[in-house]
Image 1 (spheres, rainbow, N blue to C red):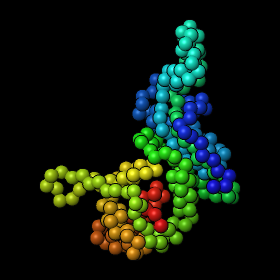
Image 2: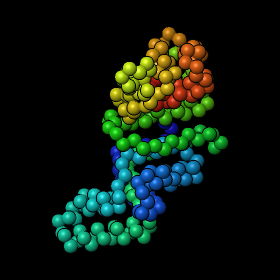
Image 3: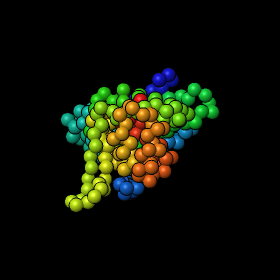
Image 4: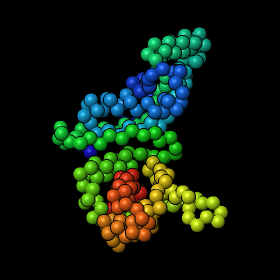
Amino acid sequence: MNDSAASGADQPDQADAQQPGADQTGAEQADVWEDRPRSWVQQAGLHAWVIQRDRQSPAQYAEIWLRDAAEERDQQQYQQRYAEYLRDFASRQVGGVGFGLLWLQKPDTPDAALWQRFEEITGDVQQPLGPAIGRTAERALFAQHSSEQILEQPLTVAEDVTEERYQRFGAEHPEVIIARQGSGFRRARPVSSAAAGFLGAADGEFNAAQLIPAVCSLTGTEEDALAAEVLDLYIDGFLSA
């Protein structure tokens, strides 16, 4: 990954302070947390993957740093520094501080289409995450200009992926089908019945471009829709070439 960087280990940084103000609801904050990092990477013209792993209030953030600096041993100093933190956050209308991971890469050419992804992943993950981040970014960048080449290959379900089905008693078909990863980001992703059929048939005997029309003829699904879902599953590591 030339000219690229991954940083994280869930390290806090005051630059990650999220705005606007603290009077927003949690739902509103979740909608806007990525606005500032999105503007940074777009202005810089970088491929970017930004993952928020945790979010804390200004008070929680201040308590972490004061505790790590062992300033709680002097109660008077602790209270003074705590108040300074909160005044600073209030003056900048900071409503929360995000913790997470950043992956950045400079495009090969200035006019290249940028791949930028912003998501919140708060569940249990497998450490170290570096290999999973690198492989996912590599597949995503390749898929931007070589999606047909990917679909011309036999794709198989990754060894760590399992299937979960949920349905009411007596129902003929499952209402929810989930593909779950056992490694990396350990994603649990709802999939369509067509994608579930594709995953069930993806044993390496036929390439994806051959399987997609066959599955769509049985499920009444649009081929373009299934192809897009298959590519997403490939990018996130549910399928491998």
